[in-house]
Amino acid sequence: MRLPRLLMAAATAALFFTAACGGSTPESTPAATPAPPPERPAGLPPPPDVAAPPANATKTASGISWLIVKPGTGTIHPKATSTVKVHYTGWKTNGEMFDSSVTSGQPLEFPLNGVIPGWTEGVQLMVLGEKRRFWIPGPLAYDTDPRPDVPKGMLVFDIELLDIK
Image 1 (cartoon, rainbow, N blue to C red):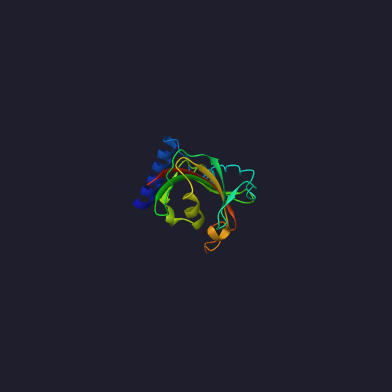
Image 2: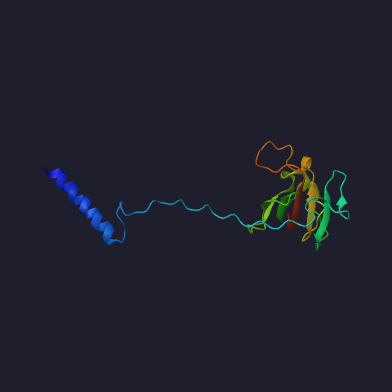
């Protein structure tokens, strides 16, 4: 019977090859441990006024409150139809950061009329280079969005306007 001898020779050759290459046999291979999940970038600490707009915040007729964190250098404001590039971080009012382009190091570019109404309205108030903190009421954020993974209620965003097209 030649077949068993061929199988035995193939198995021996495989074991020899594995040992010669620094590998291990199935009997000596430790149980595979799953790789840890990739680490999520550390959240940025919430601003001290994340729970509610301070008394010196300006409030729009729609209910958005804002403060200038860093003045801008320009005089041109984006329009609702402009494409803007921003760095931003968003927190819930309990201080939990839920999104940030700052931690990823990648600014976001988008048509201003393609985002939540609070951003469309608020970013039009800004000038190039400016950074503002916005308190956006839930109805102007994600309260009407049916997706379960979006934050609800008032949201706080630090937004820096980097470019207007």
